[in-house]
Image (cartoon, rainbow, N blue to C red):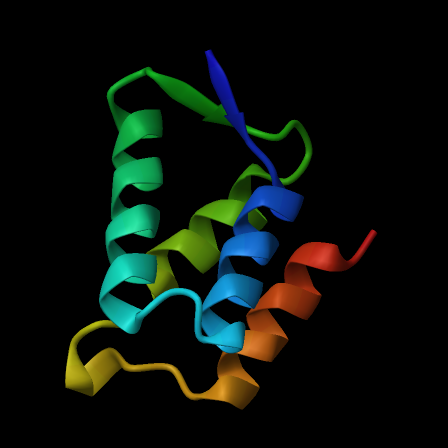
Length: 84
């Protein structure tokens, strides 16, 4: 079973910030990871489930103009994931 970690999600945000991923690609990745958990194909890192779920929730709709995240917001989410 895949384990979705804070580091994994933060790295995807970093990829978006570097220009290697588009908003659409990041949103699709987040959507897929969120539903992997819902379908029982993956689980969140122990002790960080709520934090990861909240970030994925914000990311999976970020390709819609009304929910688009700017660089500062993306950096804040990545920092949240990197907190001990």
